[in-house]
Length: 524
Image 1 (cartoon, rainbow, N blue to C red):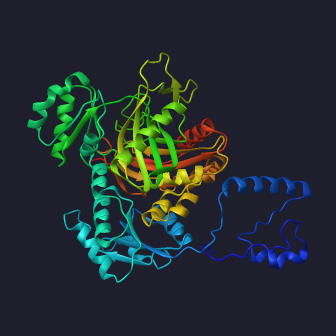
Image 2: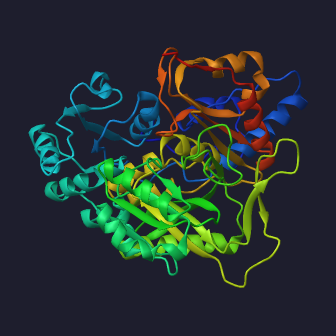
Image 3: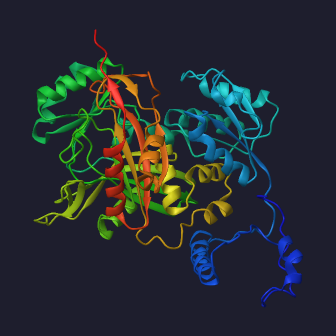
């Protein structure tokens, strides 16, 4: 059992091959057992060799601690989208001896779970108002439970959760730092990019007063001050287009951030940050979206992600620039511990996206024909002070063996010893690639195809062998809204290959082409 005391192997057995009479003593100090079967000794030897190599690759950290860890209790504000999106967190918490108490609105699906997944559920009014953090504090105190930490996996809950942590005397970084990260205009004020102007306006009069600042710098990106999943993000090629997009953003109830569009490669930067240092860093590639050249052409133009590729393949120097820029930003904000998901683009990169030259014409990073004298720079688009969403965290766990959700739990209680141990990736990552394939909703209508992954697994099982995660966001009969008004994902799946990036890309493409589903147009 996790967190159980294990006796060491008896000294009289150490250093020699065990005999039949040693079995009982061996079992007392054994963590797990594998039974290997095969037609002959040669096959058994081959399987054992491969198993031993893989165990050395994956279990490349100390498996025991000199002292048993103390059981802890953590409050998690926000229960999450669904059980499948939280199952790994529940299992991980149990494995490290952490009891979870979930705070969310009355009737949330977590409330119906038994004590195996969470110790308690505390219902509160989840309205994001000035009294929100106070309600979190009150319900924690009224529960009579003693908490060791509090955290959240939702951007819009970060500030009130940090405020509640301060009031409860629990570890936290400053609410002000979280506020800068979750407000796009404040973030850009703190991290301006030389030569790339931006402005935030709350009215059309303010926009018209400052429009002349934009004219030399088109095209521009227009986005809401606060938002997630690229919702409301658009590109304006002309002043008239920008004006229309700004007006639509303000009409939706948000101030509009306007900043110069950068066409350099986009990446995700993920840090495990411990004591102000980077314990683990991953930089992944984000191919063009439907609103950009070489992006998918099977859905309306938007900036919602279409694919994520782990690891990224930009040159080492550009990765170093991205890493140092992200580290400097977290240091400037005063963060000490945490898991951070950051988005960035490379200005004056030596690489560019194009399409492959074969019949598939998949997105492909290639060297530019002519190189600029200017050195590459990193533009941080945003810092999300929490783990990535489920799609990408599952890919990262399968690719590297790093569980971001569990690490965020450990770091909110400042358990840095175990967090460092669990921030070590698999030993052999050669040719390993994981790709999250995001299926963007192509049109509105009624969905049919909730079993499309199971159907493909039955028809073409070899295609699904390397799929490590899959999610469909619709059930048969659900109405799919017009994606030209707001883009969304129909489904996603994650492919992991140990034969390299091209193999993973090919498998992902074949799966897309062979999935069967319908979106039936409803006639008025």
